[in-house]
Image 1 (cartoon, rainbow, N blue to C red):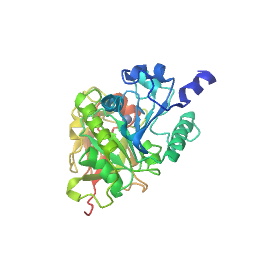
Image 2: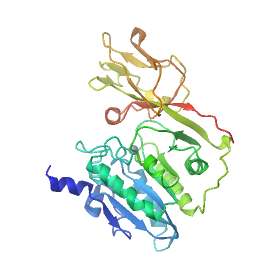
Image 3: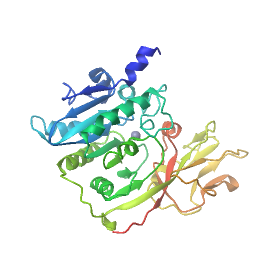
Length: 346
Ligand SMILES: [Zn+2]
């Protein structure tokens, strides 16, 4: 790839009105329509914009389709609040992939990232710099995942405004600190921010749910400052991120591999797993262990998995999220997150 082409891929396009054809476009055609990652500012009655980010992962189309649905509804009318829409990885969207092989993950390169020297990190820093003077009211970053998961919101702060925003989307909220370089962390410095997980790609109900959420926040005048009642929100926090070590093979269909995981692994998402819960088998003679990385600031202590008799068993009570049986998702992201419930006072 030559320098010019690389520059094009990460050059930010800015629009001060709706680009013609955007409401009819599919995600795969956005690179041609917009010319690259695009920040689109639309006016509204309240000037502090709702900031919505879609397609940071190019195959996760629910967010883009939800925003299209909202904008179609408001076509020819003034929005109740200004909307700034960032459409992220249009090159990967063209290919129907989370990211292209030559690209970093577009949700790991926001300010605070471990890779600040990448052109994509400069792109996200530019987006944040553009948004700061507009004094955004709130931020929503919309995602899909590959396993069976309920819809839930992720927050980096436990302040009432963040939890209110989360609660408008789902009764389930996850507090996280890692991975670094995600949109919701970078934008939390500007306004209440959530990343929302809308289940698998392609469901009409998910698009409708995300659209309803965006619409609700567009109508919101302010965030009540009193705490969210504890019974209105199931709150968890990410303790660990679990990965298959590089070089180790794995399967979900029982075929020979270093790690042979259960085929129904993703059915365990958001369920309380007791110590001893079996996730699958490790091949005889294989010494590889699952990588368990901290989900927060503090280093992890002790072991999370036991491999006695070739069985992979959890050693402590945990609630998993984003367990997936999609090999590509395991390779590109992780096997799952492990969470604990947080009790919070109302
Ligand atoms: Zn995503």
